[in-house]
Length: 314
Ligand code: CP
Ligand code: NVA
Image 1 (cartoon, protein in one colour):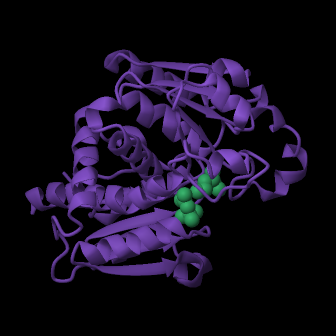
Image 2 (cartoon, rainbow, N blue to C red; image 1 turned 135 degrees about the vertical axis):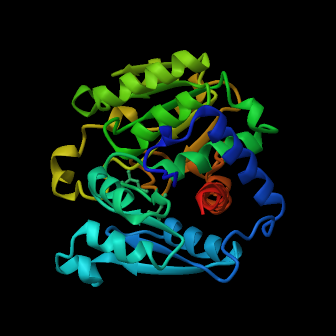
């Protein structure tokens, strides 16, 4: 069966571990596997802006021996209303995998139903699972290996209802972490996703906590994460959001109450002075550049893993 990666828990815990191990191996040897030798094309579609995702999928597919076919979906016929299903049927006959950044999760699900090749969520309103693979791989690398992840406490503060919060909940729980989300009550994560994360955490010896209190989320945390307070698609709400998240800023106080040497993550782009202060993101505990580099290695690992699965059916 062709496998897709539309949300973090589309991989089992054991499969997530395989992908993370492979990501660390790709960092040591960029040309470890070349599943798209040919070159075979991989479509990378964007309905929202991107720097890291665009670059890392483009460079990554090339390093895997393939041809990255990068399209702004709005300038394709999709922008004129061609259906997701018809687009999927056409792409699936010509490319070996599809990565798509779009709005609704239902859109990547529809693509996956009709493409016949692996479909990867390159960010939706609900999830950013490729980013969490990169984040977990970066933390693992900085701590000596994937075994280090289980049992760590990861605190995410800020907009608890966005794609990053949801993906930390699922991906962190799968990795056996204690995941804490600190957010205003109006911006709590989806209840359904919290329930899914709690179930995964229970199986893996981790836990899930959602709180309105920055300090309760942050106290003793081994890994600290935040994200923009205004995600792509939320721009119209930026007025009403202003001021709502101030007490969730990651700053020197956050580091003081977190575990000594806690690592700081931010998926980027960052807004210094808003969700994170410059001294923290540019300080010694920040691993954001390693995290950004891992977008490349983690997505290469994921695509290699998915291609091997798709190949088994051929
Ligand atoms: N973190 C991330 O996905 O960055 P881009 O929006 O630049 O792709
Ligand atoms: N939550 C952010 C992530 C950007 C990579 C957004 O969706 O805009």
